[in-house]
Length: 377
Image (cartoon, rainbow, N blue to C red; front, side):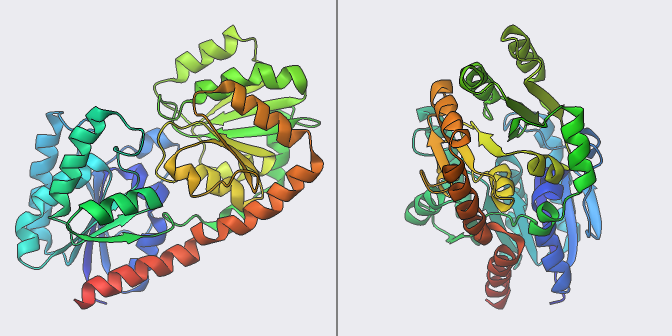
């Protein structure tokens, strides 16, 4: 395949974190790969994009009403005009809207447009405002999309029933299984020494420190956990605007010896393997990469009950799903798992099996089939 592909996202860290398997696939298929996204890699501790032939810094803003997006749109439109791309593959809501608008003329001239929805902003239980705004926007731009890729069943069914485009389902973005199985024992030992984890049960919570990821509920659960099991520690990996508020919460609850904010980590494979359990209290989740990473390593999960987590965690099989806002439910299920060796062993064995479809090899096959089908038309 001698084709030219443009991958677009709001920020370059999104491409670096989630689309390395796609870039590798396209390069192996003989394609030239360009990237268009805002360069935020300096904020992400050395995260980088591998394999791309050219990278354009496009100043996308997260807010759909930001004036910065006018500049981003003009830059992107010029990139598309001069690029003569065979396929434009866009990601993230705002960037995907601007991309499909900018690609309108190119699409009429034969360029194919793919959009991967990493979790619609409208979903069962979302606010009426989200439905009124985002559902109607996505429905409109679906008409300007050749293939819409979804990564959870709820989004797939919604799009399949309501949008006028070809809708596909795949098992996420493909987690690098080898990375999490070939961790550094020396680094894990250093982590355990640094945070005095020996003889403690360790919980890992990973994600940007923001309202949606809702780390405050997990922190609120810790005093209840410690009242029953004093030998538990919580590690929280990620950076974001809520860092100060979470530090204040940890101090107010007297948890400085049991809860640690790690900042953004580019070596999560070592922290996952230093942990015994993964948790996520996200209010909204397209899939939950951090949960898959834990599953690969045999870590049971206690997660909030949302559409993305339902793809990964089955109650009583590899962990538990609970109310996102209930610190009591989180505490009860964490205590239950840590209090039973047989339950922990059962969950640990089952979760490794359940992670397999979400790893690089099967997801790459799904993506390859999509690209081959699209380019054969």
